[in-house]
Image 1 (cartoon, chains in turn red, green):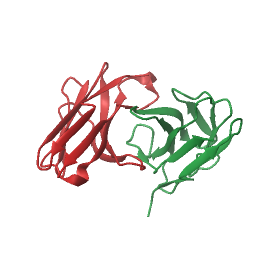
Image 2 (spheres, rainbow over the protein chains, first blue to last red; image 1 turned 60 degrees about the vertical axis):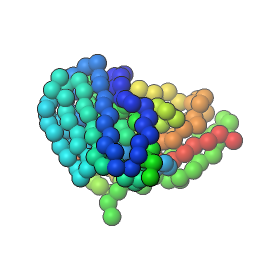
Image 3 (cartoon, rainbow over the protein chains, first blue to last red; image 1 turned 120 degrees about the vertical axis):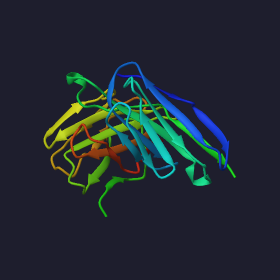
Length: 114
Length: 112
């Protein structure tokens, strides 16, 4: 299957700091998604991106669809303790024979220190 | 409230047993999915269904089986052929297969 490289693997930050994480693929994607997962729960969709260069915000979260179509970025501004969780990227490759399958990154674990 | 319900939350399996995980959605979504999540790894696709009475294997289908007899239900059976079944299993659904997926809260399966 497709490989999505998500970095960093983990982050420990002070409350109030900004956070940046990214996801890269080896092939072109036509959709990028960002999810947040809290312990013992399922991932919750944060932002969906559909066009190269697209920049979309959801409150303090902003995500961008990279212009190469092989990467995406998620930023969280002014982090708060409830931002703690694992953030996953997911992407859908471009092409007819992909079965419309989404592939997931390995996640970025975020810890916010009050 | 519309959503995806997975049950049970925790499940224990004895060696050699088959177990079935339930997934029900009331979102009227056509597409449904099963993923496996292991610590430190991303979600891996087991099976997916784009429409009732049809399903396809994902990347790690061996040792699993599914059925899709009703639009709202997509149960997953973990068979005795799955030698390493301990994991967190997530069910998801979407309007159609190229739309963002929404997830249930998962079932954690452990071996006794």
